[in-house]
Length: 328
Ligand code: NAP
Ligand code: GDP
Image (cartoon, rainbow, N blue to C red; front, side):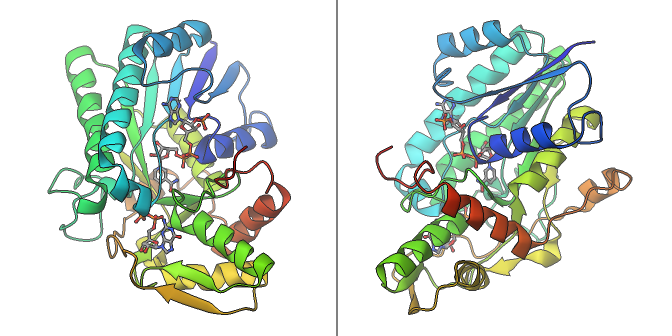
């Protein structure tokens, strides 16, 4: 049976993580490419997924049997605070077009990507798969959060009305090669790598935004990639699945900044700009359901320091072509 996997957002951080694993793991190994599979990684230059006609043409071109839907307007806290309507509208349009076409083209399976950012601000911790809709999201990213929550609602409606096999994954903060390093729109880890790199290069202070106290869980894009590949082949349930390190592996923003300083060998002045927002203080997610499901796969998370080192090396080697905010 031929399996044609379309990865939307295939040019981004997570998409390129999946491409790396598919290209480098041995064929027919648990996370490697299987006989009969074809993978297509597409970005916005192939189709603007906000556009219904372009999305339909993309499905006509690739005729996917399976979709990993990552394409989205994505960004860190500060761009989410500035562009709430864009994050709401773009992502609603993208998700509606992709799911509608996946249904029309009778795709056998779709995994869409949510985020632990979409959870209620005030809810009992740890977050688990049952708590997505139990209250309002944090005010700083309500546009993105509401658009992404709707994917879970759509998945359930497609299943209820048509029996479609649509589901979702919920990662925590992701980092790795091919990240977005634009200082204004990046997530915290790539933003700090870029800012520390510039501080070292220009002999200026390394400034971390906010108090450094909030806590986050980080997952390496190449680990997340393996979990997506596993989920695509093995998980047939509309209920979302949290793809995360353990809830005991929260790290503070200061610890992340310390690790970045170490990885880049920065020796200069280092300070916090507390006039900048901290965002949500913490959002610890449980990976209990995931660990129960993957216990026999041999999957192991990459240690944080090793993953950070690999990401920093990628950034240093690819500075000219990386998304740093400079004109390409
Ligand atoms: P990313 O590196 O910014 O990549 C975004 C991808 O979406 C790119 O391939 C981009 O294409 C594509 N895209 C954006 N707008 C599009 C449009 N209008 N039409 C078609 N494609 C479009 O983001 P990422 O971090 O890999 O995110 C992937 C998924 O993970 C997203 O659904 C995101 O919500 C989710 N997620 C990310 C994080 C994180 O920390 N990064 C955490 C939780 C969940 P081009 O680059 O070709 O324009
Ligand atoms: P979040 O997990 O959705 O809140 O997104 P981020 O990855 O943007 O992380 C935000 C946290 O990192 C907040 O506590 C910020 O104050 C802190 N932070 C520190 N410096 C930066 C920075 O340069 N960019 C971003 N995005 N966040 C930063």
